[in-house]
Image 1 (cartoon, rainbow, N blue to C red):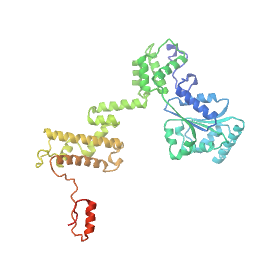
Image 2 (cartoon, rainbow, N blue to C red):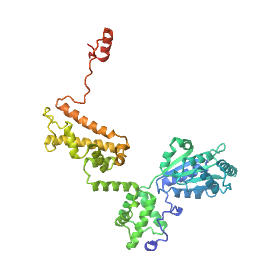
Image 3 (cartoon, one colour):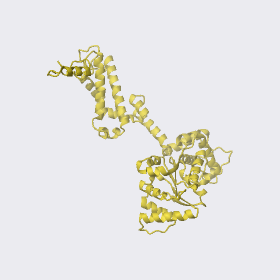
Image 4 (cartoon, one colour):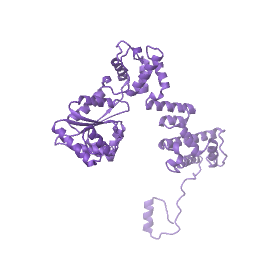
Length: 447
């Protein structure tokens, strides 16, 4: 639609794995080299991971192009397959005729015969699994069993697994440790940096027909694109595509930061998850009017919603008047200068207000730690991590404050353990008494 407006002969930012738009970076070249080396040297399993939209599928397409004449390839893109379905899919990809009621053992035997035949012809057999994070453990185990077929110095089946970063964590589980040990090479595809983002956009525009002299995106627009996309190619494509359409609708010859802002306001889902989380958290803090308070600072530091912290404080300690009443009833409102009297603490007086403010700060800190350590409390309350746990936190805060107040006033803390009562009988064995006195120190425990 907008191609003629900008002098292009094709759409530059389609989100399809088109090898014609491949932008080479050192990371992409290393990922390609890792795949090709593992296959040509018959190393067995190789793993390439990357964030959503980082270009894993495009890497797989380029890799298959280079192996087109040297290998027989089975591409598995629908990875929601159990073990039996995966074996059927591999037989279909290799054009093997198998009965529909064949057992897993029969399917495996057909595939092994095919692997031996291709190895005798000096050809590679490659299985490319895209979106591998969706493949069940059962299916990975079937692949491992197929990969056990090997010659003295080579693997007969080469398996290239492409998936998201959580796939590495799955392979670290005990249930998949046998497959994890068979992975020859692992590579993680990182997003583009700031300079690569500029070059990536210019490269795609040049492939689409834009002249080198023309500058379609201003520097401010490029800065905003990188900030919102964090260098993820798929999100870069979406932002650029929408911004070119917006500029075409407004008959603009160049795209500046204002156009990018309009696109992001209309399509907020184009932001990366990290950017969206930061913006939503900041908006929630500003909307709650909590910025600057102790609970808001703790939430910004720990990533905890301040409203959840405030709600948790109310659940444990009650509202501010209730906290004041509890504080006074527990005797914690005594002023250190007058230990004998027990006037109720009044927040209006200077000393009482300071004590009450100190207690409130301790309460907020304890509740914030509780919510940050147990995120479920923000949604499910005390029952999520066991009844009484937060109540113990509240009691410990109160007792700690009480001990400090009474120690300053010369009073014996009520929570101190009473002295051990002397036994009501005499120990007639002097040597036993001496040993006990030596063991326990100078205290005489027996009359």
